Image (cartoon, rainbow, N blue to C red; front, side):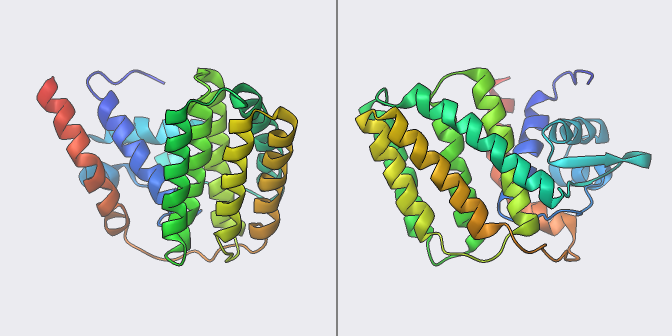
Length: 243
């Protein structure tokens, strides 16, 4: 992919916004992502929008079709199951890297994230799903292993996309309790017990959620992405002011 001069921040902002929209199921598999509409929504050129879509396609979240048509990817059920199997192996490496090595500050950060998950219980299911996914991404980031962070992040986002495709309604209470158990196991340093808990947790997520294809809905892309674009706007403005 060619480098976009001066557009890296804008590409990143669009990617973050679309990822968040997918995590929260505001965008669902099959939704179209026109370059011109994205460019207008984010105030950037179609070239910038095209590079963002290319990056998301490399992550498996977007499919690029003929005539420069991009849509939110639609994984098959087998692909969704494979994503979870791969995720279990990758997050096992995260556990091995972190068990017994978490600082008090890191534990406090994870505890705060689980508290946010608990506070979201009873609200929109999509918010709970986003928070749960971010918990796993943050665990990977704490390993400070760039390659592992990249792969875990991508597979976690792809798993979230799979849940959008095949998810059934389920309570977030179990995930909250399982995340608390993971923090405790990692803090005490038991690699085997923490690995077993992570495996059981991800398997349970798949069992609880992977079942029924989601129904596509006709919505306007500009309306869907409006809150996500606005959330990224302050970041872009701050970076522009520093330039």
